[in-house]
Amino acid sequence: MATGRSPTNIAVIKYWGKRDEALILPVNDSVSVTLDPDHLSATTTVAVSPAFSADRMWLNGKEISLSGGRFQSCLREIRRRARDFEDEKKGIKIKKEDWEKLHVHIASYNNFPTAAGLASSAAGFACLVFTLGKLMNVKEDHGELSSIARQGSGSACRSIYGGFVKWCMGNKDDGSDSIAVQLADEAHWKELVILIAVVSSKQKETSSTSGMRDSVETSPLLQYRAQTVVPSRMLKMEEAIKNRDFKLFAKLTCADSNQFHAVCLDTSPPIFYMNDTSHRIISLVEKWNHSEGSPQVAYTFDAGPNAVLIARDRKTAALLLQKLLYYFPPQDKDLSSYLVGDKSILTDAGL
Ligand code: ADP
Ligand code: DP6
Ligand code: CO
Image 1: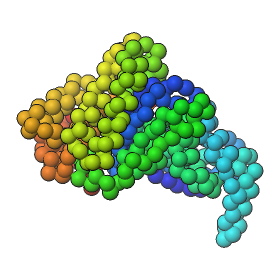
Image 2 (image 1 turned 45 degrees about the horizontal axis):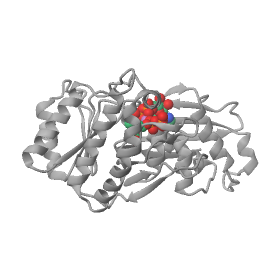
Image 3 (image 1 turned 90 degrees about the vertical axis):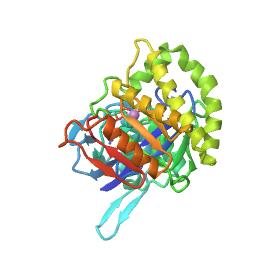
Image 4 (image 1 turned 60 degrees about the horizontal axis):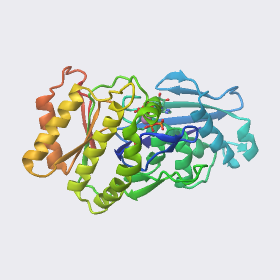
């Protein structure tokens, strides 16, 4: 049995669109920030036993089907790299070739809303690959693990690393160069505080997978974004992170979130991930940034209504929290909780 924990990550330059559905190869590079695992992470336990007659998985306590290609790809790729395992104390010996015949039982829990636009698929598949690898004594490096996690969910390849991470789209047909690399580690930009406002923890109506498939098929804006906008934004974003240039970082982050949601609107039929509360949060931040004359907070929204707010420092984060509580008072006091950590503050305030 092995247990692992992986954090989620939030993209500041978004991945939206695949050029290869089976291998999960994206149409553009992307950049993300990996969050603090204490607040947003998946915890997965994988057990193996000769008594198990099939591979099975439970997500948040409910059994789910493993028949989808993504789970199968991750299991296959990890089993292919499995090595001999021996625990003399417990008298356990598993030969490399035996892993193919042994079935696994997997139990995973997310400590944040699943399928609500907070990248549960990223934490989930990164954790699955990492934990299966640990169990089966896989010795592959982070790059290789990221390319396996990518085949579970694209965004998962970035959760293999902490800090700021870039997913290079690559250009090979077999996807071997479509991997994540770390741009800067957790210690690089310590002043930043990430605050997540859970606008709704409901499961989204359109999954990221089907939403981006529809966008690739129908949105002319997506082609323009992938070919013309993102390549130059990537260069600027890497510079902004390297130089801890908050002004540039915030400008690019907000613009990229807005363009991603514009692509969703440009899709036929249009996809609405944000709601009125999301729009009001954008207005609040835009007005505040404008009144200060320079950005204090950056906002970004994944495929869901929940706001990810990045404050330039702790003082700004405290002010931001104050403003959020004032303009969006928690509706149900019993449900509201504010978890304040070093790097992230999670509010489940039913905004
Ligand atoms: P999100 O915005 O939360 O990433 P997606 O639509 O991209 O939403 O993905 C949700 C799917 O990710 C779930 O239906 C499930 O298949 C998978 N998933 C979520 N959490 C986990 C987990 N801990 N382990 C394995 N798979 C997970
Ligand atoms: C908006 O990685 O969830 O969060 O590869 O089909 O599993 P699949 O999609 P997924 O898409 C993430 C989209 C996004 C932006 C991002 O994380 O870059
Ligand atoms: Co996802």
